[in-house]
Length: 467
Image (cartoon, rainbow, N blue to C red):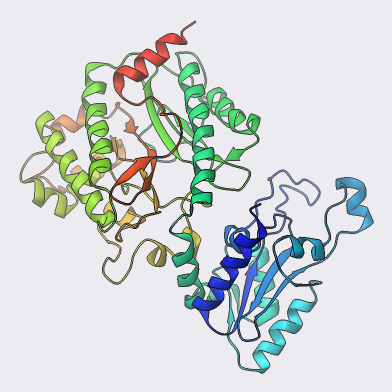
């Protein structure tokens, strides 16, 4: 937890932005696995609650009364039964004091606060809920059915939170760098272990274990697979095979809940084949090119599209694409190979603030989300600002089902060489991803150590760990 002045200042700024009404920020509750007492899923506090109220205990709600300049931390103190099993924790009043909140009250008080606000025709601001217990709580408090709560959420509050959280402060950047440093050890652990005969599950488990051993947690479910063409391929019991590629997409969430997110692709045999190296080098070039053009004032959408043009040009050199580059990109033909966006914002959420609505987080009046396949998955398009943290993650994938579907529909026949694509159906996929900070005049990598990604560096690192 940061110094309490951090939270005091954040809430003061939030009040200025929202201006009037009552802000209610819900913390999260425990999420049991298969019966109430099995808290198998680790507790994770809501990120916006953490941002403004700092506390990581379950069963808390933060209230900010903009009109009366009053703040209150709502929650029930734990009873002796919980103390017996889980130990003592601070009282809600103590937790309020730790983050500079003057008042605290039991949970039943929240209904009275909401009733009073409604009687006075004051707006009650809440963020879009994503957990079902919170949706039920909002329905009980405000009478809004869960199916209507996303639309009923406060746009004023959403926009204020986005404005405040999108540009990271120095203390936040330090925490993200801490998570990136853990990410280095997670990914190099995978590189040490990759070889024929090892299961995906084993390496995925070792990657997760590295985060845990550092006192952290995964920032999302680790992706480790030799079927890199599957975007979210979680580790299976499949055995790694000679000649295949293994893709590892993993990140850490540190003790202050800030995240890292990196992807590396490595040859199971320890050496890239010529065909693998040809595709890998294109992804590498796209990854590095993004670093040269990302800076304040540039639209992330334009960085994405420039990368797509470069990818198309280089795929044309291999014979996989053809025709006019600009026409191919505008038509979306390149999405055969990269059906996702170049990257996303990152912070306390690995896809930062995505639950608030991507149209508010990553886009604005100038730049709206695309509806074209591939580009529609770009999660941020607006102009970059100093302090943004972005992922740079181009990839090239050969998805047999997508090849078959587009070919059957005769899609983009002027731009795609389907005869050659047929010979790549067993290739898999390659993605390279790093976390970058937008600086005053450009961008830089985050983290003290660079996870190997240039082909020669990957091969040399893997050679050192051969048994």
